[in-house]
Image 1 (spheres, rainbow, N blue to C red):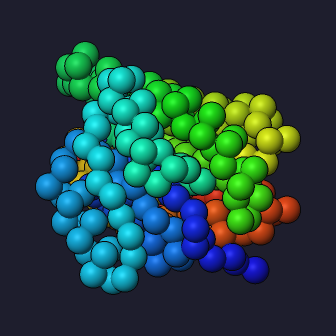
Image 2 (tube, protein in one colour):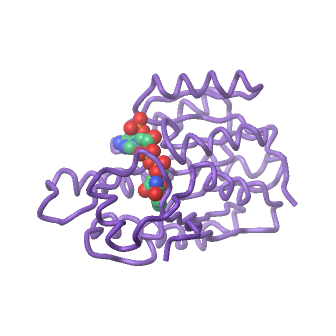
Length: 250
Ligand SMILES: NC(=O)c1ccc[n+]([C@@H]2O[C@H](COP(=O)([O-])OP(=O)(O)OC[C@H]3O[C@@H](n4cnc5c(N)ncnc54)[C@H](OP(=O)(O)O)[C@@H]3O)[C@@H](O)[C@H]2O)c1
């Protein structure tokens, strides 16, 4: 049975596009006040207005999450604005797949910087506030949902560094789950297959099509639905992991 999220604050990274954007809209419709985090502030402001027009509440924060100070500032601004943080959804990510020698070192390192280091910076900054929020939470529980990938379960040629980051996200999420479970923080991982978003460039699709052929891709809102399912469950129910693939993806 799902609960409403009124009187809770949800911060969504990667909210300027794709899965993060769809998740922010979905959590706002469930009653949460949403904090929108990404680099492209004009996109965040547009989404903020869209959420407000639909009767919700949103607040935009520009941050490059590869910078630990900016990640920390995003949390500080959230607390200054709303006084608490109940839900963190880590959706920011980049994917520069293809033959390792066809990608620059910068492109490869960027995946580590955003997908792993960025997620670490904002999660670590959020944790003291999440712990504090449990005590006054109307729902007596708080959530961290990390968007990993099917690429966090199976490694394939052409995906090496992305695989490394997503295996890392899945592993860290499970370790954090164990570490914080007695403090009523639910750590969960969502592992999508192909979702039609801006994440994909030509090389990315080439690698994917070679592996799986043409599939009917998921929509970002399909993943937002999985996140909403996780965070609206009552306190006693922890959904640790959800894999969502397109029906056609082997
Ligand atoms: N699409 C798929 O098929 C798929 C499948 C499995 C998993 N995933 C994962 O799902 C998550 C969301 O991806 P998506 O498909 O929604 O991609 P997307 O549409 O490209 O969105 C990526 C988001 O990450 C943000 N971002 C990138 N670099 C950033 C940085 N340095 N600092 C702050 N924000 C940054 C982008 O915002 P700015 O550019 O404005 O900063 C954007 O909002 C990613 O972790 C991705 O790995 C996606």
